[in-house]
Image 1 (tube, rainbow, N blue to C red):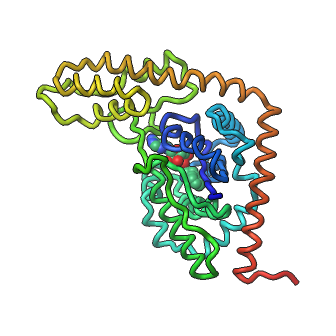
Image 2 (cartoon, helix red, strand yellow):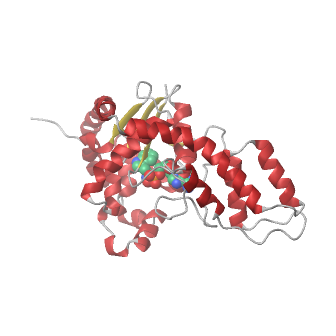
Length: 329
Ligand code: TYM
């Protein structure tokens, strides 16, 4: 059976981008693959969360994973920092990651621009830790959104490099989508770019109905098409992309038609989009609240996941230590 690894940083609540970019594929995979889904709390330190927030953020994402339908009996759900083998393997992987290639990574350059006061070494070696997360379980497939494409490319490069230096033990981890389509980028509501946790442009799985309506109604558009079949401005295209993701095909087709014949009313389209998002989010939100408050269950899931993940990670780490040449006296 092929192995799947994927993670999410606990830096805030999950939004539609996380769900449709990654979690939806986790759900489809858990029955047919050997799955490891984890909460990347070490990665989240690269943006310096407050000590008081860290645990709660992890608890929130764990509850959200479970509320979305990830089944701890089928998949291994764990917290990265519970598996210390990852830290040791990361140290070893850093010896074969070169500064030049790390400095050139787009996500490093972006983060260095966004947080010039905090360009830490963890940011630079972020792709090394991510590669370690993936290859420590010998993953074949990694379900992620479009924004993680380059990090995944780096993971393949590091896996290949290790194989070349020490022997062929790691499969090349491939990006994964079910329909064979490209990795997706869920757009935000602010007219440009992707939906994100800190951009203020997202709909979260915990958002109340009225919050969702308000956010969608405020989404950026333009003054409307003036010519038939006019090309869409980015902000408008983004609304259509969201509609394609959450609404029925006939609903999308209707709004495409009225856009193309210039009779569209964005207000109507937004109302429909908001209701379709609510139809999807509301049941998940109820489950998140229930699970979040069930401390005993969260404890049980996290410890079971940690045990399973450690078993797999320590097996690989032993192999790696021996290939590199570590021997005990
Ligand atoms: P993170 O926490 O930023 O995002 C988690 C997942 O959500 C996807 N995603 C999106 N997909 C489509 N459209 C969007 N607007 C959108 N926003 C977020 C991300 O692509 C990701 O799949 N580096 C990772 C965490 C990580 C990881 C790993 C992932 C650490 N180790 C090993 C896979 C394998 C990250 O920061 O994701």
